[in-house]
Length: 315
Image 1 (cartoon, rainbow, N blue to C red):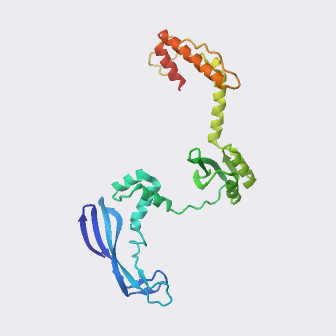
Image 2: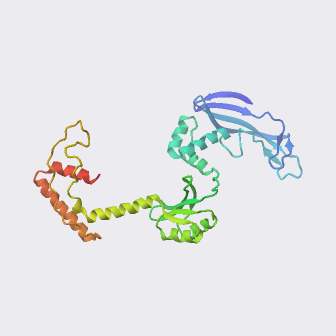
Image 3: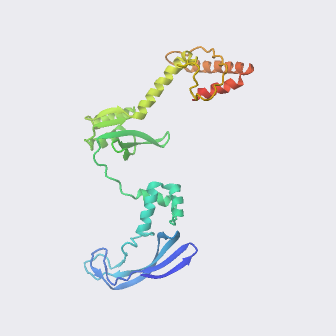
């Protein structure tokens, strides 16, 4: 029952109380109607017309006269309004939980303030952590990778359901025994996409011998990138001249725009690197030769071309 409404500086303050004459004991479930005492609780509620709302709830403490009950008194908890030890109504808590699941942290706190539900980022994170974990269910394709909790010191393992692209579990470390134990509990796994760590290879072989192991897409691209980079570095001399267009005279960028004719810069006369591996000394020598060539071109007034070549080198 609403007793009165006050306009406070922070928003609306609504005084409410319960009208039930008999309530059930929380421990034994027997009805009780003898009042012991009462006190006021303040609960944050959902906003009204953009104004922050607080409920001043008058709750009563009842005697439980059942001799077999373990408690002598208990406090009423009006359904849908209050729960034990709560400072927010269930509606307010549900709204903040939805915000924390979507944004969390500081972004969620800013949105909550605009919606009339002021809450700190720590409150939103607590609500997010309090959510029950979703059941893992059946996993046939599993992605395994590590991530840094504290870079260079503490690492953990994240497991992804590749069928749904959703994380399903986090292991406290990246040891083979930990992952093997988890895999043993999920014999339905048929495919494991993992990185190149030997611990993950050992764990996959021990915990899921029936599964096919493969590299995930990111590591495939990483391996390809490293191979291409080594090949390009080893054959830079072959790439010094630009490729001729298939149709000379055709402006590829825009046929309606006149092509600016400029003289191509002279190719840098640099000895090719070792065709197999680049040692540290050869790398330093190549950089020094490039530096000397750039200084020479700059002295000849080729500053504009140096800028163009530098831009192309970073594409």
